[in-house]
Image (cartoon, rainbow, N blue to C red):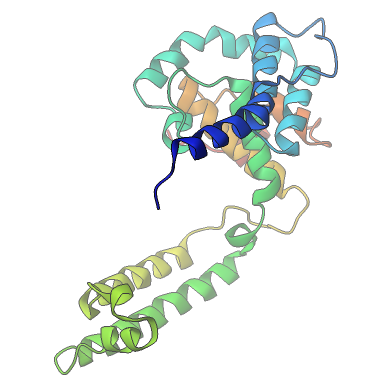
Amino acid sequence: METSKSDFSGAMAIWKATVKPMLSQTTEPSFGKPKLTPDWVWQQYIKALNGYGGSNFFEALDKLVLKADERQIWKPLQKRSDLADERWSQGLTISKRNYGFTGERPSDIVIISRIYESVKVEISGYHLYTKSMRRSSGRTIEKCSRLLADELEAMIDKANLLPDLLEEKYGYERTEGLDSLTLIKMLRELSEAGGKWALTPPVLTKPNQGDSQRTIFIQKVTSYLLQTYGQPLRGVALGLTCIFFEGSEHFTESDISQIAPVPK
């Protein structure tokens, strides 16, 4: 069906009257600039307020501006900003590879808030698997995938059974190009992955404890600092942990190092 010029004009009129004004609106901070917050951090904060994020993201932004210690967090980062820009241009940073940012290097305040946001909703799924649960599930996946691959492989000389079975259920178009050899290869790879996963230590040794989110945050923020600045910056990671997680005041840089060790 063709779209007439009048239809397009009408759609544009609706967009200009409804969507465009919403996009052009700016969010103003709910408080004034704290005296101890550097100007460059405040500018990053104002810009980040008008970005996309959930409630946890904006909660993190506010905490960073209101609670971050300039000497412990902002000065060490500013001191190494040129190095971080250089690493960003070379594609070495976690932000560029994992978060898909393009253009200029995203601000630390945004990335740290994104990390906090992800941690608040991430302690679920495979993070909740204890060592024994990983071993049991991984071995089950390894065994079942291998048995199914063996069964299909044994039948492959007699009939290309899989496409026939799926075509009957889903139709020809959705199974075209699918063959038993492809699935056998996938099952072999899944079996191998399941076996390795069963032997891999869990991210959280005790996932049901209340400090699970803090542990994941320390590991993620340390990884970000290491890849962005070339150093784990334990003092910065410690300061950020104390901002976001109550009861961390007794932590030391040594504690951060134990939770997020860096290969030498």
